[in-house]
Each structure stands twice: as structure tokens, then as C-alpha cells.
Length: 347
Ligand code: AMP
Ligand code: MG
Image (cartoon, rainbow, N blue to C red; front, side, top):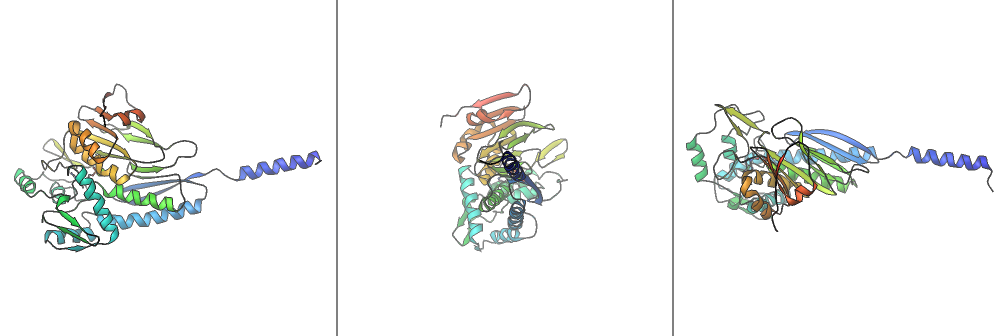
């Protein structure tokens, strides 16, 4: 039998060993890319491997940002010039993957998510890092743009080439690129063995795992006031994306014009003020939030169905909150006296 002092010593030593194994910590990093501040939070035991994973992400996001930026001199500008000249463009496999996913999402949205309307977005003044400070385009110019209306249906992709049969196609992936980049970043984290993390680009994010013994908790910004309108706890691997009219806009002659353009009218979509989507794929959530914003209060359930989106919250000009039944089951509304309409669409 062990003497008492030895037993006590053993207990004490074991106690110290257990304590010295610190619980996983949240390692945080801030990256400036994709036109916004990207917050990466990694809940992981080992700080060095968390930092290494963040470095890999930083490089990956920089590559995607450079490749698909709509108005900085770079590869996409060249692609747009070549498309306008009707040329066949050689693409690599990652560009093929990017364009193919965008094309599929555009088709499923009835081309409301339309990343070929770069020329229209530019005419509205949104191809700039600053807030546009000019008059909206004239009706005549908008009608001219609508006549030539390009879409992803004008694009033909092979494994190595890209062609368009409409010279008006000008890519702008502002509604999708962030989601795509976040998907790539999260894949890198997973490959590095990280199971619990959030990649958050200006409020649009994908979360995996949990924050220790609690789920990640996400705030959805109030579209017309400071603070949050709702909160969501993520489960497993989920992306939460919001499109809002408050993100980029300008005022002219007492009217406000924002950056989400309805391809059918050529004008900013005016039925919703924000749309939040939850989906496991960030690129899908990104494109869908934009498409459902344009679809507005009556058409969003149909477009959501076509895009395979079950969890939607749309807020209209009167601050009425429309939600799919699945969103209503899990979202927490954080304001008093909210007007809520749950759309229980039989699927
Ligand atoms: P998001 O914030 O994801 O809704 O994306 C908005 C951005 O996408 C805008 O700033 C434009 O660059 C671009 N955009 C505007 N209208 C559309 C549209 N109908 N389809 C695709 N992209 C659009
Ligand atoms: Mg979007």
C-alpha cells in the first residue's frame, strides 16, 4: 500500500498536469481583403497551427480577390474586355469551377442573381471604393442597357474555355465572390484539421463546429437602425449571408439609390431592405441573398425553392419580417413589437 503522502503527491501532480493542459482558445485574426474586414476566429488547442491556417487563408483570399475584382486593373478586367470583343478566353480549372457555380445559381434564380450586369452596376456608380457621388443614369441609358440585357445564359463554358454570345456581358461578382472565397477559406481550415471556426467578412460568414461548449452566435444587423434585429446560433457547418440596401448607396435629389440592381428594370430593387439566408454553402447563400432581395415580398418563396434555400428572412420597407417556416423555428428576433409573417410553403 502507498503511503498517504505519496498518494497526495500523485493527486497533486495529476491535478497540475490536467490544469496545465489549457482548454482550446479562440485565436482571432483580422484580414483586410474582399473589400472588407475579414475576421477569422479559430477555436483550437494549438496557437501555432491556428496561425499557420490563417496565413494560408490570407493567401487564398488575396488570390480570389485579385482574380475576380470588378474594377481594379487585373484578370477580370481583361476577361471583360475580351468578352466585349467576342473572343474565346482560356480559363484554368479554378475559374471554371467558379464560373460554373455562378452560372448554375443564376439559372436557378431566374437570372435575378445576374453577375453579367457589370456595365449597369458601373453606370449606377458602384464600381468604386467610395460612395458614388453622381446623378443616377438617365432613363435612356437604362433602357439601352435593358435592351441588350446579358445573362449567364449567354455564357458557354468548357473545361478550358469561356465564350459569350452577347457582347454586353460584363462580369461583376460582387454578389457571389465573397461567399465563394469564404467557402475556399473554410475548406483550407478543415484541411488543416481545424473543426471549430468562423470566417466573417463584414457580417457575412461561414461557421463550423462550435465555440467550445457553446454554439457560435451570430447577430443580424438591423437594416435601418443601429444594433441587431435578430440572432442565430449556427449548427455544424452553416453560412449566414445578408444583402441590405444600407450597404452601399448614394442620395440624389432627395432619393436614395442602392447597389442591388433588378436586372428586369435596370433600377435598384425596391421591395425589400434586407434579406438573410442560411445555407451550408457560402457561395449559394451569398447569391441567394442577393436574388431574394430582388425577388421581393411576393416572389421570394418561389425563387428560394428553385435555389434550394429553406431558411430565409426578408424585411420590407415597413419593417415587416417575412420568414420561411424553417427560419422561424430557429431565429431569435431581438426587437419588440416585430410584425412577423411566416410563409409556410409546402415543399
Ligand atoms: P450583395 O451585397 O451580395 O447583395 O451583392 C451586391 C453587389 O453585387 C453589388 O454591389 C454589385 O456589385 C453586384 N450586383 C448588383 N446587382 C446584382 C444582380 N442583380 N445580380 C448579381 N450581382 C449584382
Ligand atoms: Mg450576395
